[in-house]
Image 1 (tube, rainbow, N blue to C red):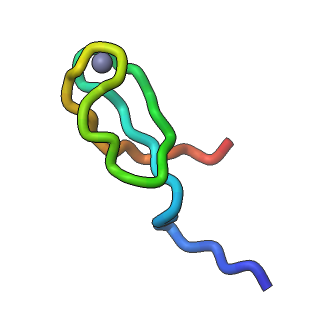
Image 2 (cartoon, rainbow, N blue to C red):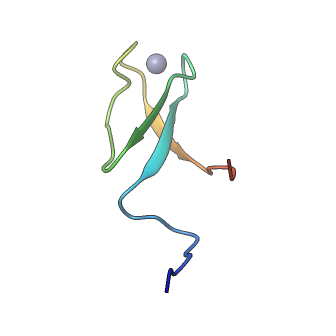
Length: 47
Ligand SMILES: [Zn+2]
């Protein structure tokens, strides 16, 4: 039985507030790998 939670602790998408680069990672990436800007967690729309 697959449980569908709204929060996925092992995968989250973060978006850079400066260049809008997106990273899907298991943990908080810290700074943007592209420009060094601040990454923020964003809601992931269902694909
Ligand atoms: Zn960036």
